[in-house]
Length: 524
Image 1 (tube, one colour):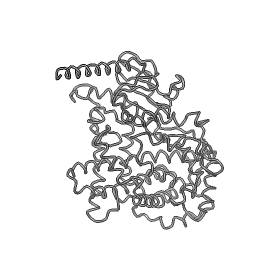
Image 2: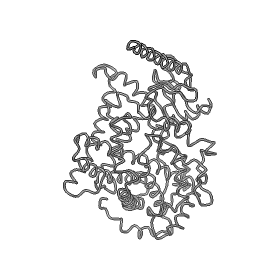
Image 3: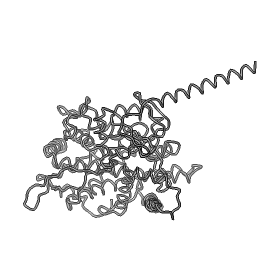
Image 4: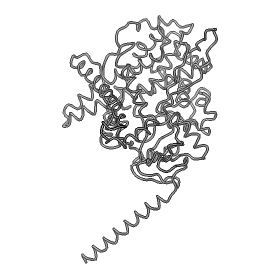
């Protein structure tokens, strides 16, 4: 009987093995998704557009009638998703397969970029860092939310509006100072200079370089260089290693310096409530306190960077869209005046009563998505979707731009039309909401800080238009300069390229009176 049982087990095992081999072989016989011509050795490299790749992918998808595409860089498969329904199916419902990140040696070992939870592979360390973030910043923590809203208001009124009044030509710098200053304050509890804060300026430089490193063109180069990572430094062609080491040093300084400064201030008893101080105290009795501290440093820097760069892109796009659409700007101001009046400034409690402003922010995020081509993901096993084979280890790019410029969902997608989201003074529920369906990502990798970013963006936009008009700059002959919108080409973030405009006080506003208690030069 025992022999028969062993034989039965062997037969069943053999049949199961045959079944899985057959199923795997059958999957591999399925076609790959549509895409450009692939050539021997180099694959689709010659067909890839490295600048404004999101637009190129959208156009190819339309031409092929395909909702997702297949590329190859040498032997590396790449899937590009242009359709929101495909993204929801794969990245949300099949998130177990599509939630990791590709790891390139140059980025991970050379630069150390994979220590940030937004860029690390899916696993225990990712869960630990994201859980730490959620414990403090999660929307269910009412006390922290109230503290953040109060600090947002302080930075808008002390760090943004007075600067726009005194040096409006530097509006981009002032927006960055307000957003990054708030991020430093809430993350580390540090005071922030009202202008030219050195930490704000240094962080802007590092995160700008990080975004460049994550651009599609750089990723192709980094993929190739990763294949050469083990060659000795002295060999010809190893020069790419030095910039990686230099960048690693900058990231180390970004992670370490504000953390240590926050600790020193806390020891002196002068720090404000912050993510670092609260999380550090919670972990005092942890067995792996050293690991907790290291995790905390990178989680703090992650929030600091994400909040700064994404909100900055959204708000500079808002200014550009108001410059180009004066009728929309006037309509927002009419709504503000009817709700707030001319002798007050917006507060958080006013925002739910501003539906037209909400429609304008939705259209801003749709018209120029903050991250048109999201941070790459990687499949951890093979898959089949809609009759197409998706290989294990494929890089997956989500084309947010194509989704939010879908003509079926948003007619005339290139036009800036807030009215598509509002009817008779009420926000519509029959039009896909960019904030909900795509702007902040999908599935397990969805941005965990959207509930922080959105009210801050609304508050800043409302505060600017409550006090100021955004007008065209004039040329030497006194004629208004027609600004043609142009955006950064990297596809990682889509910040508008520098453009001229005038930000001037509204004629009926007593701005100095409204801002008189906020005009000192003390740090915030």
